[in-house]
Length: 454
Image (cartoon, rainbow, N blue to C red; front, side, top):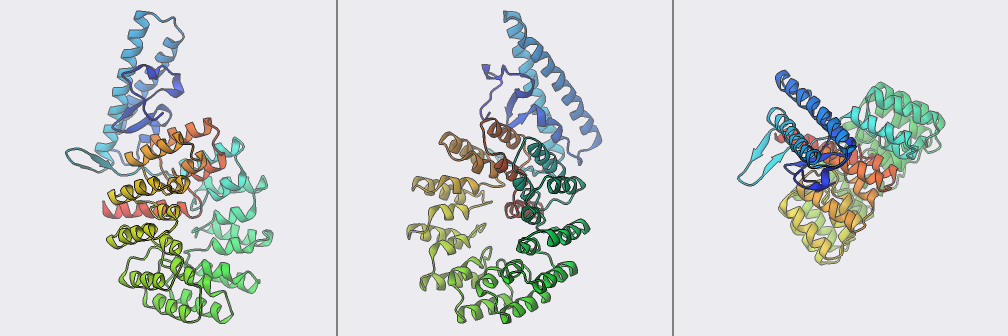
């Protein structure tokens, strides 16, 4: 499905299987309607709808032709129809690009904004997989961050069908709506692992979140879950609760881990305090995730000099694209850090440096599954070429499926369908639609950065 060409004989397929390639984009007929973006001007939308109707008509004619005996006349007509279909699909893509997606053109390349999946489509596809027998727990986790009416209907259905309530709770990560709070309260009465509810509060700074954290602590939940759920929070309430948990004897390592992403004076003071009190330095290193400040680089250097596990420092580089990050990745790789973990730290990075390092790591024998998982959210030609190569080399189809998290391009849907046909684990495909509790947040942050920079 990666190299279809309307000028050869590879397109003699049935209605649902006819596809063409346009400017490195695989367009599948089942997904053309998804190209009708709500921001299109009305005349352009009418034009695209007209093209879509013509494409449907041509597809019907092609199916009928396939049932006829092959003659010079039918072969000629088949070729003409396919070339016309190719032209129509090109026009649809061009119309969308010209009216919705801002492009930056150079002499040799044209970069377009990644097509990210909508809540409605994510829920629709997850429901289809559930109906096809996909593991309910994977679908529950795949609802992370989704707050639409369809998402809540699907959660109700999963609960009725007996999905693991801890996975349901994990799928509430980051949600601050009335329905989310109501379901958390219900789950607290039913679920054995209340820590899953505590972790679903990660990143939430609302009054309800603080009330529920207090309730969880009073109810005897493991304090480590509450501490780790404070990751990214820099409010007075967050610092007050960290101090309270430390006084109560919470494992310091979880507090250190929960400082990930925080670059404030309070965060650096607490890191120093935790180091003085003997907190595990590996956990301190993990808590530097996402930080690109002078203090962060200084502390990474100090930790490495003190013998901290190089893999822990490598993981703290996830998503960083600065010169210091590339220099340190190179150093860690040369000094024996796990190449797979270095590869995973490239998640979301599509720069020339990222691709150069991926190639180097693969040549050195890095775990290909880790490299595949690090492609999550990437929709560039290089990412598609590498996914194709991995599948040819026998890399887990499930890992490749999960690398598609958040992508809504026709090429992404084409590959999902292909992976399912080839027997990929449906649960992995489900997690590769919206992502799980971690990757769903990752691709949304990538989208946010793209919008801010556009």
